[in-house]
Image 1: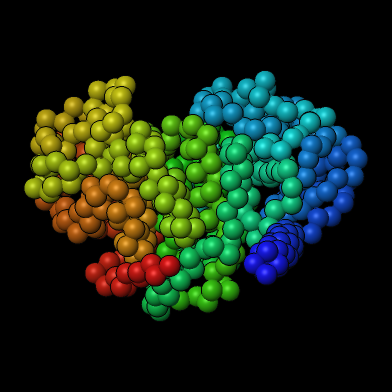
Image 2: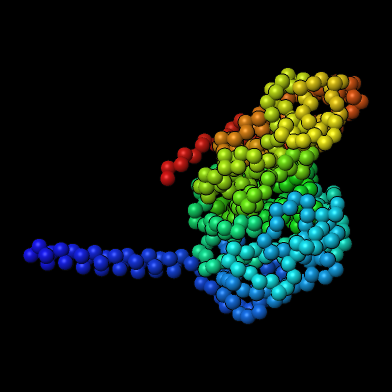
Length: 472
């Protein structure tokens, strides 16, 4: 009797295990996107044609992937006259670019280019670009008074995976050969507040209106962030200067904290999180970061922290814990010290406290009175190229209660100083000591670059929403 009972129990267990395996298999299959069989795919003006029909799918942001291995037989528009370049697995070379021979400063390196036929295997990412017809023909994004100096108009990414991805998977970072997949279903959308936007001017720079949809389109396509100084930025939609990157990411994060419906926010949310994933993939691949150099190192940390918070990725939301030597301009250029104005948070100079000064006066200087400053470059950049672009970022992080994740208190203290310290007497002292006049409204403390940010600062800096506790 005991033997029969044991046999029956074993049978029940085996049947249960089989059903569980079938259920898990069915769930796994349902969790994968249905693939199409195609001989070519197109994304944002770039067409990749394969040597034969292959299985392809799309990530949640619309970018294509191919289940490989495969061979790309041709790319359109074609790479001609050292333009419309492509690269397979973008190398981490801050001083070089493979896309267009007109990249400033001798940055172009044709040896980095991938020319068809391009053999792809799982783990690969192919970035293909479309060049501008003429240099400086396009207005700089977020700063239309300037002409963009990058020769790259836009880029598209084709990823090669080993198998179908879930339909809500984000594209792996284009430098992430490990191809870590994040899922949109896991986004903590509940962490985003719905702050009233009544009375807020939706303007970048005084008098230039914008809409939520415009910002969703700005982050829909990939941003390039390996060639420092923005010399190959995808200039149709991506800012080429760090100051404008900082302004852009601050505005995007703030938009996602306002009282639009979740459906209205979704396109921007997916695009902005994808940008954070791309930046994090660059970091994980070994990139040293975006160090202070005037305004150029600004804007890359916020998207990483934001994406990490909403995806619940502890390493991504606190990047300096995993990579303590990682460099970000905002952190390098803010520090605690005794300022000549009496403030306790100071601007740390053109290349910041951890930079290597290449010229006299490129380091910290605010601990000295103006008549002892070694140069004027620090104050000039403090007032025109950095501080004004940090306000939106700092406010968004405070609204999300992400100060601990950011892990650099001097940044928040400095932005508060910038927005609250009356610099009237300080401007007069600087003019007397150095002959430099910073009395123009656009170089005064107490202002962000964009009216949108100014209005939200006034409305919410001292009226932050309550912190949402993680109950999961």
